[in-house]
Length: 499
Image (spheres, rainbow, N blue to C red):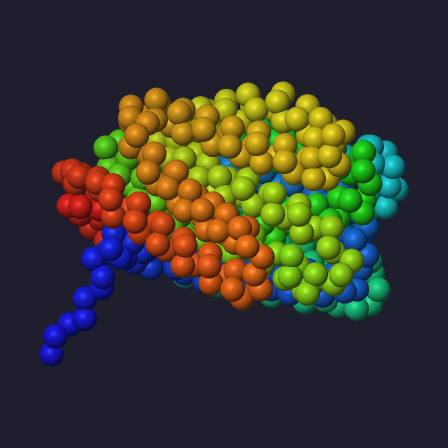
């Protein structure tokens, strides 16, 4: 029996799509857990959109300005050093765990108190008790980040996915009960507390690792990793200031309802990026073990796969948004459509920046990642203010897409290549070609007005044809003798990478 062969023009695309190896299987576990977790969160959002007003979503988005900032200091960020350094040095492991627990307790106190000035800034008294209730998450999750790092370092991705799924279902249950009882924005806080309880319980049980807590962590052990931890925290602080500034500007100048529209649109646009962040955990686990030459091939392959999957998803999302968002959330959410379409551009390049930033961290250079993010801080806030002044919510969304999207991605591309000694062209194709194909596909639907189903078909046909044509004509990366472990996500081949 003769085997059916795929058309020659499709082969360059097909070679890039399959996942292979042990780590690819782990990535699929993480993505499966993400789908179930994000699916439960999406159901929660749909339910609360029918039960609550857009202003309630805006109030919670104001809370997130503070809570998203403080959560970057929780022990999960600190414990990431255990993934990079390993678990062999028990005094170091226990010192990192103890430091994470102590910081979690401090964060509970700080966030509880910081809710008061937050309520004054937005002139919403309810923000203080809402923020204080959310602060209990730090007490509940104290030490959980170290258990998560153990699972990740040992590449037990199935257990991580199981924990993510259980926590997501708990969040859905907590929000549903409180929402149906008429709790208003308190339903969001109940959801986060429920999530934290399930997350802490399952991760501790599944890791099975026995830590020894000390009120005074070993100073010698902490000194060994303080530069890495400082770099991780620096990245988190700067990134959060850049990505929360838009919420602060909209909430302060345009009000809770406007922020509600913006926050829902932003969260929807970022779904593919949140999924990619899960696979980034696999990338971080493996990149930490590769030499610089192998890391270049790995990063290029990861970028290529991300683009070929996410770019068409964003193109389809852009086309169906005017119909889908009002259908799911109700006609009162029409104002979120244009915002969603604008933020999609930023969302896509955010995924590129995550992969590039992960490569820097895995190479032991998180400080460079942090410096880039800090350099953007004095640019982003003025840009958001100008955007709000000129175009309201839409103006802020455009500023986000330009400054934190195109501008920041180009900066990361240049910094990663210069730091690693890679030529810029090494990453040009996986960074530029997929969004070019997606833009061509969306542009084709704008030429002649068509029904939604026809526009979807046009996007798929044009994207596949355009992407396949470009990838087939351009030469693939030549294989090199790289020390890539057997069974990893990347295995170089002669004409094109599998990533």
